[in-house]
Length: 240
Ligand code: F6R
Image (cartoon, rainbow, N blue to C red):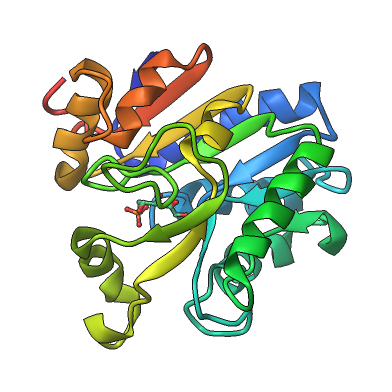
């Protein structure tokens, strides 16, 4: 694991962008795995600003998002589809047909199989960007989720629903399920870039890096990945 301690969130986002850009310039048709949440917003700003300044064209890039809430339509204000359009895709030249986000509506099991098939046809993920939950979840793979799962339906933990309730008007409105890439799909990515900031992530980061590899902390499996770089601020890295 390559661990980079950064001055602050902006520095972590900028350094992650620099590494991502180097990789994209090496492979301009890369398959990019993307998260939602607060953490990637800094990186997404560097990506969109960089695009405006001519850093890189995303016209041949293919994207696969990690997850989507069950029960929310694409235009729901809290859907991850809308989040990605608003915070990244609309400001880039990525082709709409190259954007893949699991559907949280309809027959969810079938949606999972369709998503796996699309990812396989695309040749798998070249560069996976990750955030991390304070319980060590990656994607919506909560503690206890078998490492060998690919795309599946996840039950969200109370922790995660509470953490994400800041985007909703009440906790009751936070969906209880999501469609998510599995740990296996994430581990199959050729390169992983993880960003984590803030005190509340410090225990998760300690367990990810120094803990045993255990289902109790899904992100601990990342120790086994051959090419992962973690960009942390001082607070997230405070227990290392
Ligand atoms: C989101 C995702 C989650 C988040 C995690 C951290 O697509 O897969 O694993 O990365 O919940 O969320 P934030 O960044 O909001 O702290």
